[in-house]
Image (tube, rainbow, N blue to C red):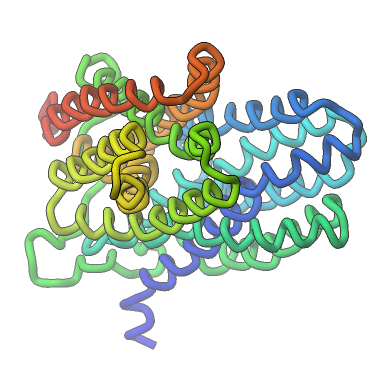
Length: 411
């Protein structure tokens, strides 16, 4: 029993893996599976249904930016429990929609609720529970969305064909309730101190493994007045834009250059597998080499991915795309909490991490529209991927110059 208590952090990581995998992988990542059947059922054009995906992006941008104030005002676990219940109910409400307006309301409410039981809260939980191997834990937990997303895509397509989209939504809702609610209500705790424990690694006889204190670091309301934070947020927004170009436009790019649908699908599958492995790899690198070197690695991988897409006809370019796209795209999940922790400390971690995630999500939300405009104007995505090379390089240099450079010292 004592050994179980000592390593309860591992149980926290496993529970977080399952919760994040179901919420992000099953509910959010597979929302696109509903577009075609809902359009056919309600008799609406594709553009109206795709607007619901845009509305879902609002929650993933605004909620992280306000998370510091939200968590300061409401108790963390009570908010997670409430958000988990509302996430299930709002997703389930989709199955009763009889008009596009109902879809819009459900999609917007779902994005707001699900964001409060997604990347931000679980990065906070892992940060509190791990001193040693924190980056590895974050990478392993965040990998779950890709793993569950791949499985749910296959199962979801089968269920839609066999029992219809409304029944599929209800099945997913039941699975989410069965997995997420017991874990959040009875297993996950915000801090190890609530169980009389120390963070994983904090009980070892090493100065570097001592737990962080709440007074370690900078205050958000001070840093928001200084240019360093704003420059960092701009660089992260631009990098998020480049990361999401892979998800939103890479498949269509391969179709445009004459590759078959099955070939493009295989590239997408390879990208998802690379992303899952890349998250763990990047987490390990943050643990071993720190924020500067690990961030340089993920940005270099992202740059090489865009360069290989531009030079896709050169032998070996596809292999580079598959190998580098995952570690590069992992920037948008694994790198952000580590950059926040390294640059601003633990004192106002929730606020900094939330705003940083919000700006990265905002950049990602801009990517599909801008790449679509480039495609319509030039007839190809090539110009977009070429620009992404220079944007990644410029924003990366700026970001690396700002990491680990505190703008003020806190007593």
